[in-house]
Length: 419
Length: 126
Ligand SMILES: Cc1ncc(COP(=O)(O)O)c(C=O)c1O
Image (cartoon, rainbow over all chains, first blue to last red; front, side, top):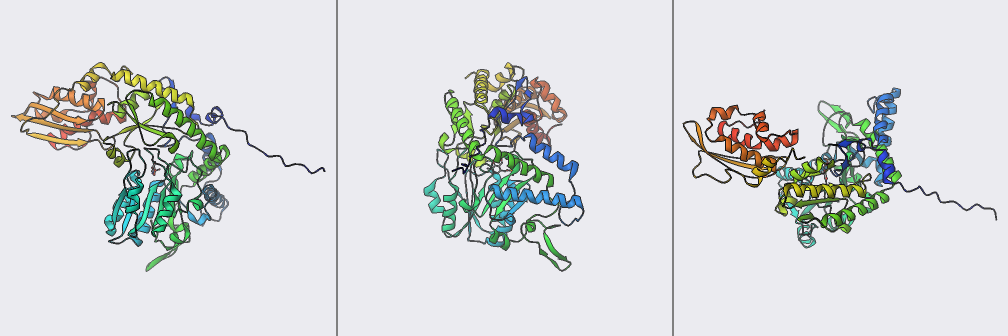
């Protein structure tokens, strides 16, 4: 027997030190200290591969997409559409027709609320969201309910920062036409059981809209397994550039929906008496899109795939568990949200009565970047009777040493405010 | 660091001057900083276009609350016309620290409330 046994090609596990070399921005000092960037939940940093791909696109390929027949326009169109295919594979969407490029998560959620909502909601209908939503998954629904006369309801959260499932059972009923919820809270870190929530929405005949802004960058995502009708996310939180986001939508629903914005690219025919719409996904992409940004996003996805989403999730789990342990030991510090096993890579906290702005300023002076405020989620803060919190968040490039730097800086804050 | 959270700022934060409310204030105004939720309420008693009593109430970071405390200390005796002239630099001098664009909003909230209450000027002070 000479048949060769297939050798399994296993990519070597990346190390954080190697990953960090790809992020030029992390190699600087802030106020005389090496930068510790703990604000990726707001926006992630970009690897040099993404930066260079966008630069290269502008140096060699750029022209407007679609319609043009010259060489550059074809190359730009190919680059743009390749990015769409990359995104579809990344979230296991059945078709590129279901991948709509937007500006960000916010625009994707507004698109669904306006286009689907205006066509489908009427007085007596109910829209269900949760109290742990980002403002971008609250305000569009408030606006559309005002326009259509539908009623907006909220699933409350428990003291531990999870959805109140008893209340959910009451609130989700045959009047509910849409259930929109976040896959991961950007304040509490709570990871919601998306597939289960989608199934519950479908069981009462509602569509399920998922805010994936915090989940897609950190957890492997399969829209077919989740069975979601819509999933919105942002490139800038997943190593890609700002200015581009994605809305996945189920084809049959998208086809039946009226357009969102009107203009070039989204039409089939324009007559003075009226217009007809282009095919999916172009019906929802009016005007010149963010082409270079699509190229950047595509390379960001390559980077994530190369490191491996499972590695990323596990890496963040370890850092978060360590940070949790360390922060718990600081007297006067209270972490918001569930235990480390049930949360993503972020920790929001309050620290004695030091205002989060003061904490963030003191940390910044030691080179530690965290976010302070209501994180565009005021209802969560109202729920806890606080106006703001401080948030440290972790991603692919953060290390345990950086958690130690955070802890040391927090002790300094305590000394300054001496309580 | 010691520069930013100077002892006098922390002192005003911990032991705010003129914190509370006035009986029958002539001017009463409240506003928030939409970016961070800091709140300031300012109350004034005015005689012959001159401030004779001032009080503030509020919630927020050390910078916004210290700024309010320091400002109310200066207000008593000031004419309304003098209030109109107060600007950004006045507050920076009062605090005595270098301050970036984001935290500047914290520092300026009390002055914004003051000018809106007295003169109806709703803009952030220049
Ligand atoms: C859970 C969640 N949803 C939505 C958004 C909005 O994202 P964007 O500002 O990119 O539209 C964010 C960003 O902070 C978020 O964390």
